Amino acid sequence: MRIAHWTVTTAAGTGRDAFARALAANASALRRDDFSRAGLDTWIGRVEAVEALQLPAALQALDARVTRLAWLALQADGFAEAVRRAAAHVGSQRVGVVLGTSTSSIAESETAYRRHAATGGFSPQDLRPDLHHLHAPTAFVQQALGLDGLSLTVSTACASSAKAFAVARGWLQAGLAEAVVVGGVDSLCESTLHGFGALQLLAPNPCRPFGADRQGISIGEAAGFALLERDEGLGPRLLGIGESSDAHHMSAPHPEGRGARTAMHAALQDSGLPPDAIDFVHLHGTGTRLNDATEAAAVAGLLPHAPHAAATKGCTGHTLGAAGILGAAACWLALEQGLRAGTANTAAVDPALPLALALRCAPTNAPTGHALANAFGFGGSNVSLVFGHG
Image (cartoon, rainbow, N blue to C red; front, side, top):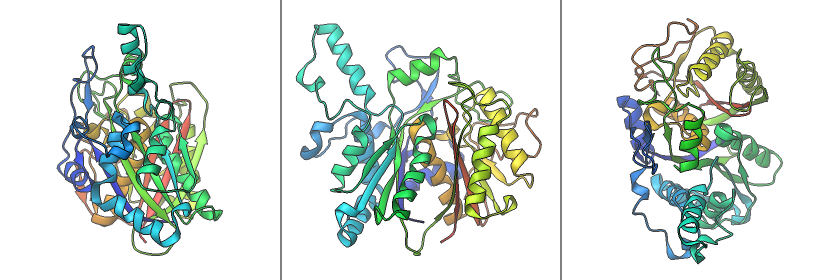
């Protein structure tokens, strides 16, 4: 399966070039929390461009922070136009949409309930059945792109937009679509920030994945999309997908990283590649003590040749349901440009982690033949993706 076109928008900027520049500079786009009403002691990845964005009149009924974020990303890098060209060629009913999200439009629901608490009732703008549900961002993207094919929302926490690739590939293999828009979008909201705060997982400083001094997560927001096709044209190719569910705990991974290793092993088997064919690994790397330790053990055990490994949440923040598509995008930059990301904010790797984990604090440039991206979610939902050259 070919990645015919792709784009991402993060706190580092709009479009793939902004993302590439941030990774090449190993720069952090995190800032002190200025989103939550309480002003939490943490750092966030905020996409400022959504604040004043105006949606077209035809899409105003679905206006929300998450849909603005999706619209912003769709307009970048000529992505929307690329999808329209594909739809003109195969028919709009033959182009599917499958997106991952964790919080969907819950920020709008939060606002509605705040108004209810203040006034004792909901206003007409609060009672929008097309907006206040999980599928709203996917329905918005489908409408914005003028598509009439299959559509589906995947919500498996932070593995959502990686898992979306499995659904999309299945549709293409089954002949249910000729092309699929696959990706993820998640915006900042109070529920996420305070939820992770209640779990005592928010870092009081910019997150430092796999760092000796790591203290937790920095929440971010992002949107990313790819056009997945069956043809043999130019572009990175999706070679393998691995999924697992360790179901060890609602919010903690298996202490030995069994689920993570199972997903990576399955992805390699699916791709037909041996472990030592992987040149670059984009780690899930949340910056928490437990998650990073278990992922490090899993990677080191499966990939003893120690390929260049990095985690980019120190740049963008942890974008939850959009984390998978950002990990994939980092792999595509490695394949297309030879840009192997570093691990922003991490000055020294935790010496307690396995020595076989070749975590790089700084980015490098080197030809990359195959790349692997990890995305792991609460409840033990694990996905690994393997990409290679077209």
